[in-house]
Amino acid sequence: MLDRFLRYVRIDTQSDQDSQMYPSTAKQRDLGELLERELSELGLDDVQLTEHGYVFAMVPGSAGPTVGLIAHMDTSEDESGTNVRPQVVRHWDGTDIVLPGDPRKVLRASENPILAARVGHDIVTTDGTTLLGADDKAGVAEIMGAVAYLAAHPEVEHAPIRIGFTVDEEVGRGVEHFDLDEFGAEFAYTLDGSELGRIDDETFSASEVRILIEGHSVHPGTSKGKMVNAIKLASRLVDRLPKGERSPETTEGHEGFVHPTKIGGTTAEAEVRLIARDFDAGKLAEHEELLRRLADELAAEEPRARVTVSIEQSYRNMKEFLDADPGVTEAADEAARRSGIEPWREPIRGGTDGAMLSERGLLTPNIYTGAHQFHSVLEWASVQDMAASAATIVELVKLWAEPEWVSRSNTRDRTAASR
Image 1 (cartoon, helix red, strand yellow):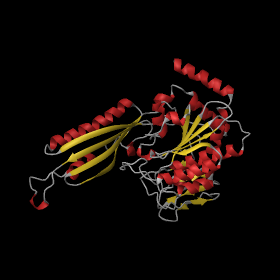
Image 2 (cartoon, rainbow, N blue to C red):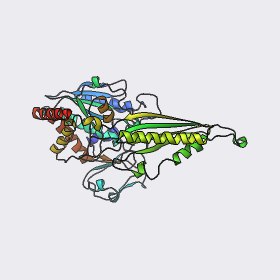
Image 3 (cartoon, rainbow, N blue to C red):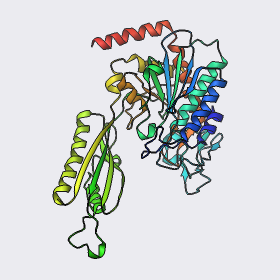
Image 4 (cartoon, rainbow, N blue to C red):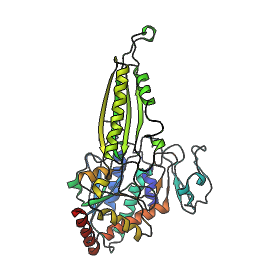
């Protein structure tokens, strides 16, 4: 599995929020083509790289419902994904890990309790100049590792498996063309989590907000009383965002926020892009209303400018849908226990492909990968924790082939539905 992971992270698959293509970058298909070949070499059925860049494959099973396993191939725009040079620190002894491409970047146990508990593990890092891409190539490698194990051990009884590797998750378009009927799973699991044992069944509900400010550009030498500087107006709007609350840097747990992610333009026209996040749909609406009000106030102060707000829903809290069928998530809990790991829950202060899929009817909780500090040059992963995640996948699909578990799960689900 480690060999696979190191092979995958070296392929640049960054998505592009501003692209009009799908997938948003052609290079995502480079990894898709490799995975298509590797799945075919494992002897799997119905392996395909679709026109939209998804990779699908089928692993026949002995009994039970068809279980989907999903991970995304693209990586974040927050840091470079070009020329990723991973390093593996074998049997880490707890000392500072200096990243060789930029010695100013250091992973310190004193600053990272999760890392401090991994003394003796094999730790994979970047060289300090790029992200690692463990979000979500750790999940890809773990699914591939689990499937390779099952292909090599046909005596292991397990449920039928439908594999799906997606594109453009990082720009919120990961399942835009994901055909649920073609995929054919009864429910699924994304491998896109972090801490060992953490099973995610709750995400933010999310909106994308764009505020366009149209000013008026005049030569600066003759602009008195005429120029309306859109850049200055955009800056004024950003400065009025909440500072002691409702921001990522001041919130935690179930607290939501509004967050500017990009600002740019010219004197004549500028745009502020923001995201609004909350676990409660009503509070999310309040965040959106705050941004509309700030835009209206700005337009009232400078009536010569035109200020336009557009809001697009990204995804909803998956818990709204998963609670209707708790057996799907409870199976992940049980699979973790069978792997020797005590499962636990905590809301994701973010989203996954599973949030959108759950809303569309394919219930999809999220499972840990053993990777950490996503979207950062300080991203790292424990090989041992990644192996534990792959083992959890194997236990999960074995569990769904057990008639007694399926029967017990169906009983729980019917009870929940009646409530």
